[in-house]
Image (cartoon, rainbow, N blue to C red; front, side):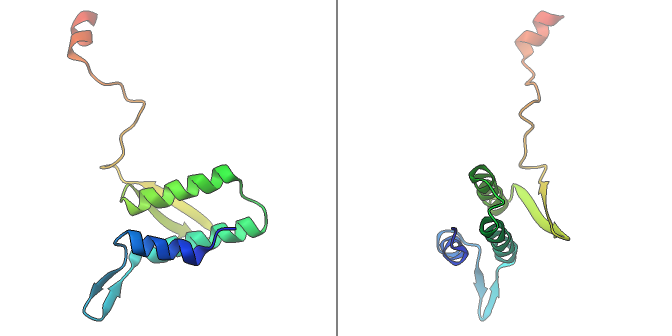
Length: 104
């Protein structure tokens, strides 16, 4: 089973998600990540999550830390939002001036 405390400690150690200004600590993302990890752990205990889903949640957390996604809770549902600046639609065709000229 995932040890949530170790996961959170590694995030703090390996990334700058805990900021300190004199005696004030800022950890906005850490609170959301902790709640997601606790939620995942409860699903693991109930055996209601697959390895594939675990990998997906790890990817979501990574993208959240990289400011590519937003996370928030609506009731018991984890909501994921895509930051438009950082997301590129992989299905959008690239415009190629040579092929555009040939098509005309």
